[in-house]
Image 1 (cartoon, one colour):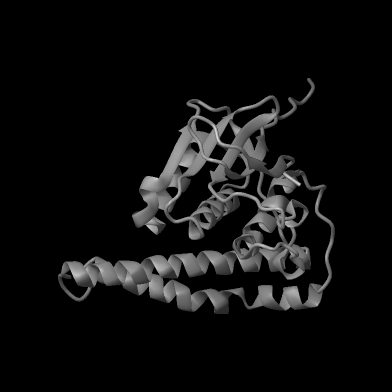
Image 2: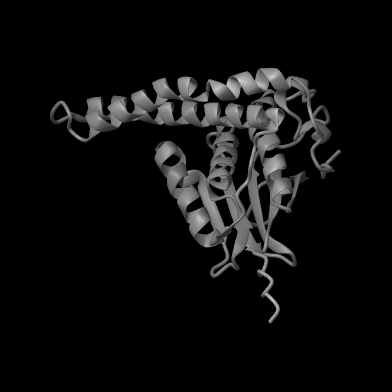
Length: 252
């Protein structure tokens, strides 16, 4: 199977466990926030000037802290979905600014792999409707997952206007094998039947992306793509963010 478009998400069990995890969210986040904050303070000169080796080591700690916190936030969002407490904001968003911020965050989190990221974003994209914080989290997670298993391969993010919204595509160089079943690509990791370990590690992100995009009224799919003049063969996750709806004017 080379393409799979999922239906709307279905409900899941284990609600009480999820609610307990959500209640403990602040406790889980505190150590990571402390590590990130202290490392940033050291980088700002809290204990004096740093030599290049010290700065590099502390920067690595800070980056790892942000990555771990991002993964924790993904898991907590999954628990929010299971417990039925997930709420999506629907604000007017500038897609160009959103993607610019995501690319900047990726460069900070993966400074050694920034050169691998290629962006093809149309200028002056129309306003869309979405949850800015969660969209940034999902986009950054998908980009980071795209370089985990193919650290030397190009990673491409594209955005353009489509008939019903703004189409965003994230494409990496992983090629689908006959053992990879795309029908499980958007399933939560605990029911995974994907043969590929790399995809199993991505499933928190794809599961959350599936729910978020559907919750915003958009569409999402994954497909195997062939090589063209500019891009290698690989796997592509695509989604459409709906245009911002015009508010109805009250009748006189």
